Length: 323
Ligand SMILES: NC(=O)c1ccc[n+]([C@@H]2O[C@H](COP(=O)([O-])OP(=O)(O)OC[C@H]3O[C@@H](n4cnc5c(N)ncnc54)[C@H](OP(=O)(O)O)[C@@H]3O)[C@@H](O)[C@H]2O)c1
Image 1 (cartoon, rainbow, N blue to C red):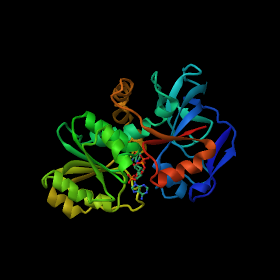
Image 2: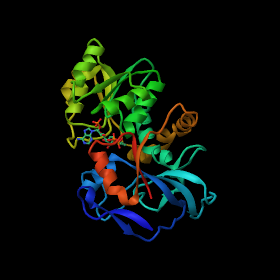
Image 3: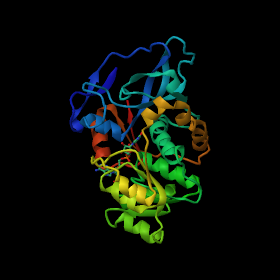
């Protein structure tokens, strides 16, 4: 089978197409013929060698794949050909991947493979970050950074669906148009105006109740200032490459909370709680109340281009590989 391998840590050119033996499923696992694999910012950080605890080269990246069941291991009763999407612990940028049967969800009728591949990581991260711990409630104010990105487009829709007042930042007018269509009430182009000042202006100094931050660096620091009293900041990533430090004294004096969320580790520690939202999310997607925004698709040969697109801030919604 063809797969994409990171042969050594580096820039997008470190991704190359290789021939590998197709994997076979062990007990409790399934081999999937991959039709679409989601690309996540974490894949970029793993390729660079910057992901804490990430894999060492050579490795095949990719943590979610949609396709059809090709072969089942012992103890798995699933029909060949069934359309499924899986969260994997790697190896999804390939024509075939093996995944544990308990990590699979059936793909609802009407949902494309590309949309399905864009569902698990971004929607489960967004949902658990907003509602899983110390959850967002109707009428509250939420600020979503990178609002037109993969997790951002999911978070904006979920927050708007809950009846919250949504603030969203992005770097271009096109991205903000998309964010607004998905439910952002207050689009903020952070390249043209200071998002903290804008939040202050719009809320008359009250601030927002929750910030979803996957950027880090100064964005994290300024987001703490933009929080209301008793507000919480959910940190999910460091796209800026600059990991922030939480200022304990400020947090205690201002009654603010910083909460971390990591999907993979949360699933390992409390799968029922983290995956509990899947039926509701699937129903909302099927009924058209939510959408998986697939920005761009690339074939396997275009993997390096796809990574460069994502890390160069060129992408909107989900970037998907179609082997
Ligand atoms: N904790 C978890 O379980 C989990 C799960 C999924 C994702 N994440 C994290 O969530 C964040 C978003 O992930 P995603 O896959 O959905 O990516 P994405 O939002 O589609 O893409 C990243 C976006 O971040 C913004 N950005 C700001 N500073 C950047 C910089 N220096 N370099 C590149 N981009 C920058 C850009 O949007 P603008 O152009 O609008 O600034 C860019 O489009 C990442 O930090 C990722 O690691 C965490």
